[in-house]
Length: 212
Image (cartoon, rainbow, N blue to C red):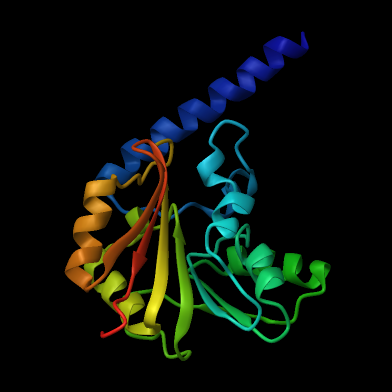
């Protein structure tokens, strides 16, 4: 009986993802806040999408400043803030108030005070929070209507030599392939630094040149 229930849950999730992907072809749809539980899960099957793996490869150090674009419920925000410590800080932005509220709750529960949360749409020219050592876009790029403007704004927000990490997983309805991400990033001024994973699930590290 338990096996049938589990199969039904898995089938429902698959159908939901296909419906979401189809709807996204017609209109850019960010992950709805009522699905935040799904965003918070670390897949046992896709290692490159796990929060611990993404954070590990960011090479974060105490005192760094990090920009979390489309932070959602804070799956990456919390461990990144823990890594940079009290002397650093994380600026977490999202366009959905409920996602931000959930991330704030998790930060309070973890006793972290080095995170600031902002309801901001990337690409609108409002990233006036200073400059950053790192920026992350985890399964978010395809949800942004003007991806070119967004990446140019993130490029400007990074320090020279700063790194943007873009993570994409094919099960995400807004999946962006490596070639697409690299084309958009190169147009914004980035250069490829590191590729982790495979064509179906990867993190692409993009560097702002030191002479930029």
